[in-house]
Length: 402
Image (cartoon, rainbow, N blue to C red):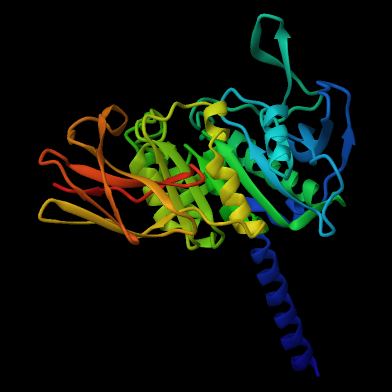
């Protein structure tokens, strides 16, 4: 009997240990973050049509933390199964954006946008957006590009930012007008980087749209990569924070939005990220896309992509990998709507950093489900773009031609 009891006890302990391990991803304790947080409405930073919210997050240096957010659902009666929804993650210098929430509302989604640096979306002065007023119980603010890497991980901004996004997800899932099985996440710049991490940490999301920001940051010759390599800082980022540490967990559809010349996040690391996730992924490299919140939430492809995942909308154009033979490039694609325009984008620059490379356009021929283009003799890299009859554009991967 004693032996039987000890074996049973051992198996129980092993099961408990396995459960505890399953509830943690990286440094984050998910059993804590996936509970509905305490929250309250607030009149601070009031905006017409928005619900201002303060929700509780994990403590910082032993002190309680409250996060400010704007929330709203579309006007009118919610569908019987509830509104689809999205969690919006701001970038550097950003805050909770009511206009971002409004934009998603106009597209038929409930949305929440929170400030991840312990602030209210209120300037201290009338003449400047920054510095902003702090909440009564703020968490940490971002310190440059992982400038706080030497601190204990529980005191680092990125650790808290990821936690706050997951908690915001837990909150919006609890609202009765929201369909908890139709929620996605999107982020811009730093928010795109956080999206790349969060989607591999929180498996409850149904789709993800990282804009500019991505994984594999230390491999970039843009601003982000140059700021964190080499040395211990890179090791900390790669081990705990970079999306590449979690991409193997990502099985949901993803849309990767970036420009050809982004100074912070370069095309190669965007492409590496899209290739590393386990679910279907689509690329959208926009020619000389500007970097900013407005530019990052404006593309209609983002909303069409979300609809294709959770609302049975028509999918965006999806490409296979391009090939080149005898200076002629081809790529096959899948489209649910008619392609009205196609181009080959190429660069002849193989020495400059990626953000400095000049890209040019050349026409491409549409032949059934294939695009064909002559590759200029001086091209060293190229990719295809296709625009459909909805005026929605996506692109292939780029490949090296020399």
